[in-house]
Amino acid sequence: MSAAREERRKQSSTSGRQRTSAACDACRDRKVKCVFRPNETVCCTCQQLDIDCTRVKPRGKRGPKNRYVQALRSQTRSSTPAQDLATTSISPCSFEMNAPEDSHELTLELIAPMPILQQIISDWFGWIHPVAPIFQHDQIMDQIRRSAMNNSDSSFIILVSSICAATIASLRRRRGLYGTVTVEHCLDLAERLGLWSRKNPITLEGALAMYNFSSATHHEHGFDSPCAHRFSAGASIGVKYLIYHELEKMSFINQQILKRLYWLLFAGQCTSDMHGRPLLMLHHAHEQINSLIPLEVYDEEVSISDRTDTSSCGQVRRAPSYVPGLNALSRVFLIWQSSQATATQTMANLQEHIKRAQQALERLPPELTWKGHPSSPMGGETHHSPASEIGDFGTDVQIVNIKVTQLHVRSNLLEQMNTLAKTQNLLITPSIIVEERHRVVDELLEVLDAMPDEVFDANGYSIIPKIRDIGSALLDEVRTGNQGGNLQAGLNLDRLLKKLESLDVRPLGQDSYW
Image 1 (tube, rainbow, N blue to C red):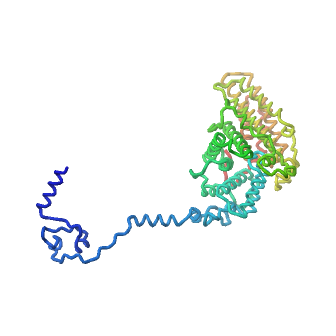
Image 2 (image 1 turned 180 degrees about the horizontal axis):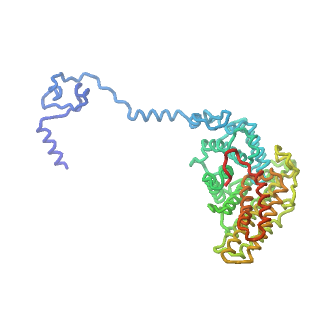
Image 3 (image 1 turned 90 degrees about the horizontal axis):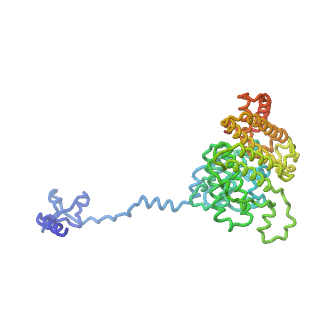
């Protein structure tokens, strides 16, 4: 390589041409090479143009590299994420709810004006809390009061917006009380505040928000909503991570809330499985889960156990505990899961699990046992009253939830028996199945006739598909007309459809639930 370079140097000197390191004024202006012959003071370009070859013009200073990029970086550093939020309107609501101009103006009024927000939170605890006891009333209200005086952090705003979304989606008859706040508005706000940010740690607060948004989108858009499944998966992953990595480090109250959330997610996943959508399961039938069952204690007792000052413990007013009802519901779903944990389904297995489902309700404590009439004096005249102020309304909500779920499990197992009987050409079994099917429907109609619509509203909109699913078996029976009892089936079907007309409340323009 050195020989080649030496050869090129010799050729250059032989040609008698030499490039100067400092171009003359003319060459610099024209941006051309400035070349001198040996022993000459005028460059070749100036000789050809017959002009003076001078070097008197001052050389301009070169600017910094990537000046445009540097300007953008400087502009970015001078702005904040909250200022970026301020450039876009967050909500379709009639009142102004643009993002704050800086991070010190994050308030709960981004969700709704405070009176409406308090109405929604009050309705959550009055109507939804009995079937989803995952928040403590005093704790949430204290945080909201503190946030009204000071600014909130984004994670708490996301959590409260998720509570609002779940409440609005579930209580469709009460939407007129919530102004123009919608599920979509709550979702948009949460996303703008970083709901999906990869930098977010996995926390109980985040898992609760994911669960609430899953419930809201499920109620709004049906079982097959990709968004609902995405939220459900996020909540499930968060809960399992916290159980295996953080449970021992948590306070007692957070441990109990995490376990309650675990079983609510399990209930939702079993329900999806019963509707033919087995997408995700928290645990399998063979796994030991006894340590994950929440304690059947009052929320006030849970709070006191985390306090250092217990001087006022005797003055605490106890609200009803809904954990026993949640545990009873979980046992019903465990029966369903056990019935499906077999490689080959058999009549004996299905009959055994129908028997277990019936026994599960026979072993309930008296306060959760179906008595054939409501224990709370709610009736139809209290449509606009807060549910928390009316008798034992919350317990009635749980009783209906457990009873309808048990009927749904029995109905689903009966239809599996019916399918199995047809494939095995069993002639006697179908008549037995029809008789048991009618018993299930009769029990369902008894519940529907005895309880006011508000009890079903408080159970969330997920109870509607369960009733439809039970009724669909009657519809098949009426269509086929093979069993001779299709007249009674038709009458019962008409009663079910009439009741569903009053329960199935949808916003104007929304399609059927599923």
